[in-house]
Structures are given as structure tokens and as C-alpha cells.
Image (cartoon, rainbow, N blue to C red; front, side, top):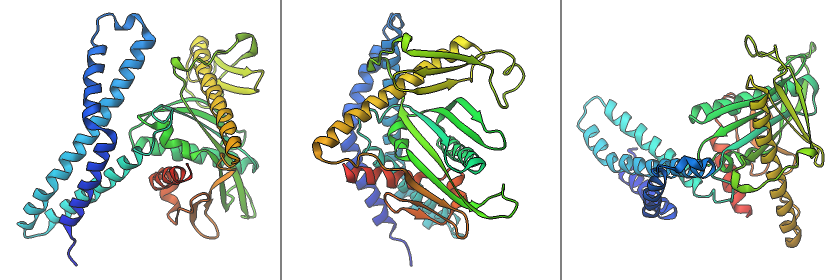
Length: 366
């Protein structure tokens, strides 16, 4: 049966029009003009904090405008693509046109999800911490598998990633890792991944090849900005320095450059070992600590709101997703029941459908 191409094109064009209205393209273009003028002021960098805020916002606004206009051009070009394809006898051009239609449809669906990200911190970069939990060496290996999954996801989307600290387990895998994801709406997009991830598989570390269940926790917080006013009394922070561990190349393990900060009142511990300089590592670790304290404050405020509502289900609970590799293959989100049998693709970073389902589910709960 021939596809109703015009119907499909009209449908995605209408969806894109509604997105353009929600994001208010003319307003965005006006903001870009104002921000470009502000960024061009000669003495802008006399105030580094203000300059950073202006240039970051300009970058985000320009990226959104570019994405909207690029998609509109692609949609407007689709009728001509199919018209030209109809004149090709071998049908190869038709296949290319169909692929472009499917690609545009997927891109518009992803952008539509972005319009659901309107939380206070959703536009910010994200700090992701993964920790092995119950399960011993299995859990440490599982934590490293999750790290790889998120890094591959970021790589596929061309998100910038900075690994700040990784603590390797003795036998295999990792005890924990923290990395920063820099991209528009990184926090809003990835925050739905927070929670406990459960793995069921035949353990490669069990000589009797028995099935094991292991757990790893994923914590995601927004990156702190200067305007957040998270004041930390240095008297309340214990600073420990040590040598970096694990693979890192020549020179990494030769000096006590790694830094661990412990915020005594809350017990929050952060580490950084990705820089050679102890001063740089301390500054980075302090920024991570500020972000974690900001998230703690946000959660406390949310808990008060939930208590006023008589609703204590603000947390998504412990086990938010289950990954089963044996005796059958399935990944299932336990909050919204989204699932797939293609476990290899998911573990290779193809988690877009799960993230989209999570964002839509969260919006439905609001």
C-alpha cells in the first residue's frame, strides 16, 4: 500500500507549527538580537559572571532558533523531494525521500518533548553520578555498563561530556563516577533517568553461571550557576587530597592532586581527579558540591509542597527501570511501563524512547 506522503507531511508540519507557537520564534529572535548586542559590549568581560550568563543564554537561544528553522526548511523541502523521486525509475530516490520524512518526523517529535521541559533548572547542564549498590562485583560491573550507556547516548547526540571523577572497584567495574553533560536542556532531559537501575543476567563472574540481580543508583542534578547563591562555609568542608587511581596515563598518579570534599553538616562527599592541578580539582569539586546542595534545597522545597498537597510520592522510587538479559531479553521502565526487547541497543546508548516516555510520564503526573 502506498504511503500517504502528503498526509504525513501535513501532519508533521502542523506539529512543527504548534511547536513554533509554544517556543514563540519571533520572541526568541528578538531575544537573540538583544543578547548579541549585550555580548558585543567592549567591557563585557570586566564582569566574568555576567559575561558567562549572557554568552551561555545567547548560545542556547541561537541553538533553538537554528533547530526550529532547520526543521522548517526540511519539512518545506519534503514535497519537492517526493515529486522528484516520482520521476526516478529505479525507486532509489523514493527510498531516500522516505528516509528523510522519517528522520524529520523523529526530529520534530524530539523537539516537541523539549517544549515539555519548563522546570526552573531544565535548561541547565547536568551532573550525573552513578554508584554501584547491592550486588558486589556484579553491581560494580553494572555501574560501569550504565556509565558506558550514558556516555554513548551523549556521543550520539554530540553532547559535551567531562568526566570529573571515577572510583574503580578492585575486581571489575567502578564504585562510582561523576560526569558533567553540557548541552541545552541537558538536566531537564536526563533528570528522568534518576533512580535505581536493576540488572538481571547470568553473571560472568560466577563459575557456576547462575543468574544474578544487581543494582546501581543514578543521581542527576543541575549545574549550579553564580546566581543561585549557594553559600558554603569553608569551616564546614573537610578537604582531603590523594593520588588519582585507575587508568589515566603518565603523570596522573605521581602527585597528590586529586581532591575529596566532605560537607560535614549534610555528609555529602564529592571528588575530582581529572585535572593535574590540586587547585583546579578543588575548584571543580566545590562547584559539584554547590550543585548537590542546590538539588538538596530543591528537594526539600518540593517535599514541603508535596506535604501541603498531602502527596508524598514526589520521588520516583527506588527501582525505576529493570534490565533483564536472562532468561529473556527486556528493558522496562517501571514507572510508565515503556519497554523494549532490544537490550543491546539500549545498553549501547539508544535510550531516546525511554527518556521521551519518562518526560511525558512526568508531565502527566504534574
